[in-house]
Image (cartoon, rainbow, N blue to C red; front, side, top):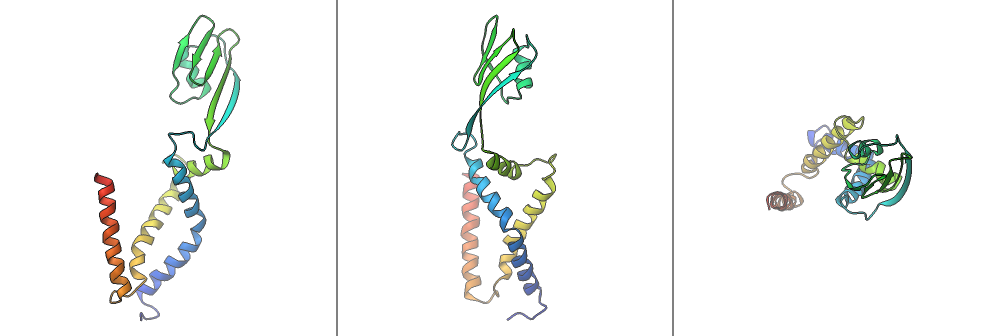
Length: 171
């Protein structure tokens, strides 16, 4: 058995309490990761209808920016209206009516948290969380003494996991 002040014991204690501390955020990342797998579908999304007043006679190039629709593309345009996948814009009145599919509020917040970018305030927390996950990966090797059968079986599982990861990355 490891001594009371051994490095292995300290790693186990940090692993345990860091695990308890991060259980909530790990749950959010797990759920939002599953939702993000389906981001190119509408499986979790709900339709929201919008009516927005913008300046009359806006060009189709400007319209997408003003409506804040990503990947905006006009499908048809006549003298009075601009038609696009999500709806229609009346050039004379300046009224745009359109429908967007969005994630429900909580799922949207969770996926934004999961996929934050370097400019987001969550950026630093995501770095901390990534480092904590790396710590969990490596600290698991300190849970059992290297001479035990559990540790040796764990190495076989580690090898299988690394091989599977490499296969998934390169195939």
